[in-house]
Image (tube, rainbow, N blue to C red):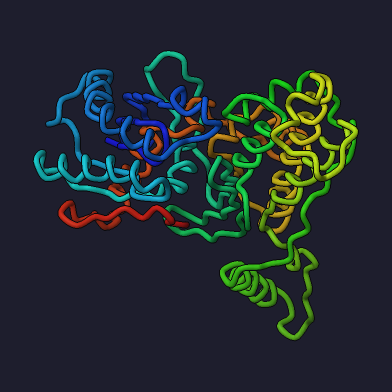
Amino acid sequence: MGIESSCDETACGIVRDGHEMLSNAVLSSMDLHTVYGGVVPEIAARSHIESIIPVIEQSLAQAKLDWKDIDGIAVTYGAGLGGSLLVGVMTARTLAITKNKPLYAINHVEAHAYANFLTSTSLPGYVLPAEPPKFPCLALIVSGGHSQLVLFRDHFDYTLLGQTQDDAIGEAFDKVAKMVGLPYPGGPSVGQAALKGDPHAFNLPKARMTTVSPALQDLRSQILDLRKDKQNKNSEIRDLRSEISYDFSFSGVKTAVLRQAQALCGQDFTFASKNLPGALSEAQKADIAAVFQRVAIETVVDKTIQAFEEFSPASVIIAGGVAASPELRKQLKERLPIEINYQDPKLCTDNGAMIATLGCFKAMNDQPTADPYSLEIQPNLSM
């Protein structure tokens, strides 16, 4: 069983053997946050308190199982909103103690990638990949809080190649949507508006990042040593791709959108952003949405293609809420030389099944369990 409560979705899923989804119950409090243009942590936490037990009971009923059939409990303990995480973790700790089940602490971001291992279900309305990802696997994890490129060599053996240094891509979509008067959440609303706009109506910049993490430097050194061993050890080998950074930045393009929107209104930089929705025409909003979506998606796709060329993975997966974007899937399909087995969009957003899936693989690979009497939340947890 997987319990997820890191943001505004209260979710519980049950997965067998890491591949078969038996249930996936999700209750979102998004409607409560829409009026504020973003998630309000206090409202989200209160909603989790009200919803978590009914959602767990719904998940068990959907799977037609009883507690005696559950082998273990997995729960998101980070990253996420502190109050929201606390509700899920305390519930899972209590259940692990009272039901005498092993407890697995789950990294929310890592679990998004593991949603791609779900390949079968009897639940209606899901279209799952025909087969799980193959290792080594390149994962692009993109959501409202995270933008990361990760190279998985095997289960629990991975290198974080790069990540956002400011806004995550989903967060940038939300802020651009609010800027031009489109509803929250920004990803779907920008995508809908973009269908009516010209994606090449004007130009927006892409950030040029130069930072390379020590982990990536070590990985490149290992690969270079292996290449030297296969060739003449005394020969000089230099790969120009080794100078590439896989970090992201979306703050610059977000500011460029603001300046472009002000210019379209015939105003300068002193024109308040709160006045933009009323000053822009529907056609201008559509063009802004189309151009921003193209450039933001191109930014993560460019890095994905570069990483694919450098590391030659056996498979590529996308994960996180933005992985449901038709534009992202279209651009990757056009530019990647291999096929991607895309996961059902409903499993790209936060859900309990992805938590349960990672919990299954932890159990099957003898990963350590968490202490139900002492597990603490880690809101800023990273991979």
